[in-house]
Image (cartoon, rainbow, N blue to C red; front, top):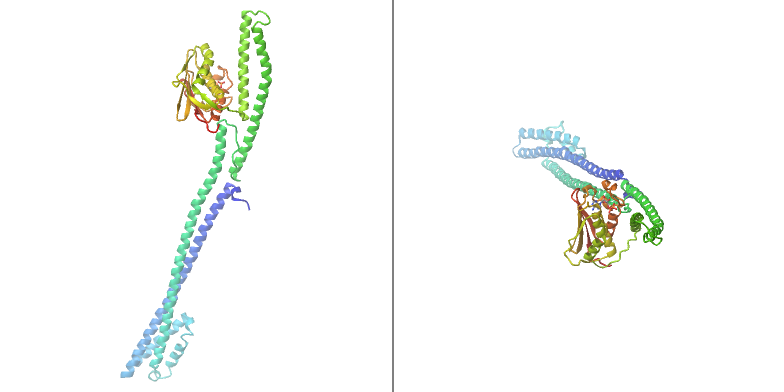
Length: 474
Ligand code: ADP
């Protein structure tokens, strides 16, 4: 038999609905059956017991009247009393016969009574002579009274049974209703919980994929359509991982291969520029300086590509030590000073704390600062201002870099931290590979910090990141 978790959603819903229907109909059928039985019992009480009761009562009335008239006859004699006795006995006989027709089960019990009555009223004899003796009538009354009592007892028993059956039916109805309710509400909650669990898992995977993180497998929690969806997602994630690995391996290989000849080119340009192989004129100097700048740019690009490919293979090795945030900002500003000067951009440090101690990898944190300040300079127009703020609060040091550049539209805020992503309107006009922010985010995340952006088109940008002051167990 297949396990419930392996059934598809439609089958699970059908099993659940069928169970509910079966319980509901079983309860209703039982109640219906019980009502029919109760109706039969009550109709028996009415048609048998009640009918018998009234017939016996009427017969007894006649017999009591016979007894009275016998007593009267014995005291004062006379035909009138005999006439009453005969009439009563005749009526008694009629009722007796009718009752026996309807209730033949009393034939045995009332056998003596009917035989004696027939003998007593032999039409060939004179009524006065054959009048039934008083004791006989009393015996008849006793038999009938006993039958009356039996009938009442039988009626009471039927009524008790009816009452018990009614109570039992009410209990069964209530239990059935409660079971339906529990299964209905409980079943739908359980089904909703399991469906939601599987959906949440796939949703988490898709969301993670959307943030640009490396695709991770999701848990396969059921064998239904959602389980198949999770399996399909995992197959897709595995393919994406393979492709990403191939791409980063290829980039790493290419970067290594280009690095060596590039170093030779830089050294050659340096040697020629320094005049080792003879005097060079101003024009040659200018071209050599362009070649040097371009080869430096290429080296930096290769370094970034290598960093990204190392990060992807999980090789971000952080060397934690006591670090001073203020010093890191100052040194970054100093190193980027020439680039800012070249664009006549003012660099401001708005740090009031003389030192901002934290436990972090200084090399990597400096790389984040250089990326963010470098971008701020790169994207600000000539004559703009770039200011850096840092302060410590709530166990964190927060760094913020503000520029007077074009700003970034709200809908791009998440994407700009993805690898190789560059805003469409800067692609043509500004150099870059779309790696700086991805690398920065990876470094900040690895420190247990957070990086974010506050910017809108035309208002400049403020890039901030926070790092915990203390990093446990490092
Ligand atoms: P790169 O600068 O090499 O293109 P980044 O990862 O550093 O790569 O930046 C990604 C994109 O984010 C940039 O191409 C640019 O569109 C946008 N961006 C980053 N910093 C700024 C900034 N200070 N002002 C405006 N846009 C920015």
